[in-house]
Amino acid sequence: MSLIKDNQTRKKVYLLAAKCLKKKGDFEKAANLWRKVGDINSHIELAKFYEHKKKDFINALKHTEVALTNAKSNPEIAKELKKRRERLIKKLGLT
Image 1 (cartoon, one colour):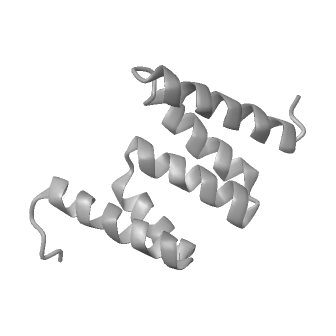
Image 2 (tube, helix red, strand yellow; image 1 turned 90 degrees about the horizontal axis):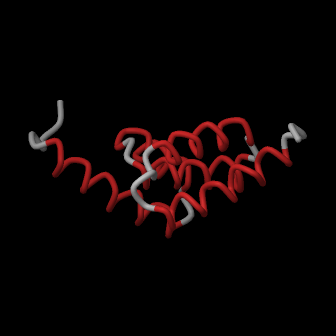
């Protein structure tokens, strides 16, 4: 049971904690928090985590695709995500 009742506040706390954990180098714990939040920024962070830390390009691509679906209103983020997607597709040998 969570002490924080408000869902938005809980997500903010998770994101702040994930940021601190990432800075400390504890990517596994940060990733657990990003999974709980599930917003576009969390999916971007999970894509980076899977690509660069786990070398799990399939999961990196999955999170990139989810983030890209949610980035339609932000062309700048969508452009970066498309570059990430293309790089991951190449790494997977799908081109």
